[in-house]
Image (cartoon, rainbow, N blue to C red; front, side, top):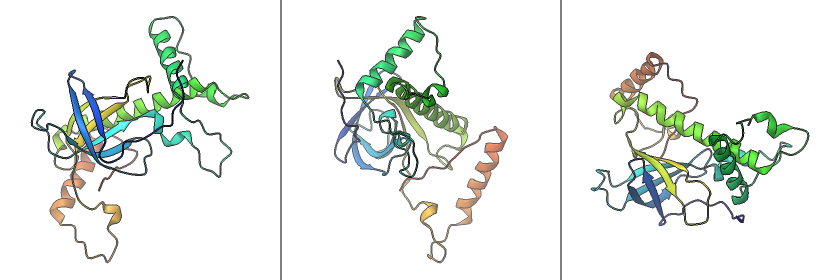
Length: 228
């Protein structure tokens, strides 16, 4: 029987194991979490052996973990219920997907199941959060792949993708993760009028070209992401 535990993030100094899509594993030390988390967890990390995988000494790790997605806890001013994570519900959602894959049951999950007259079973909410984060991961990684020609200039490089390996008996899934380039600097949102910070035209011009590229490949991004 699975138990319920408190969802957590990784504090500075802790280690995360990322199993790469080629089957190898990468040990990462957390230097800094970028808080607050919303849809994904974001960390500045250092690989334990960067030369082995041809990685820089500092990179960004994004973890698409349904355990900590902010949708679980609606704003206080709403009447919607919170849906805290439990391992039992996560395991039941995994069993649901396995049964669907084996043809034991149809994939009849819909959002309507969450908002009926009676409170939806906890595993249905876990299935919703799992699909939400999987879709978010696929959307971001897919968008960066389509912008491969711009990686390293106006969008960050993608170094690797894989799954986070949790401690034994703590999770029923291995959350998706992606390693991308860390570009130190000041986010544009922090540059205020009159602050004396001048952005050279040679920096702005490639960004304009990138936006034009989005249109050419029919890429639509719902939000921008910045790390500092």
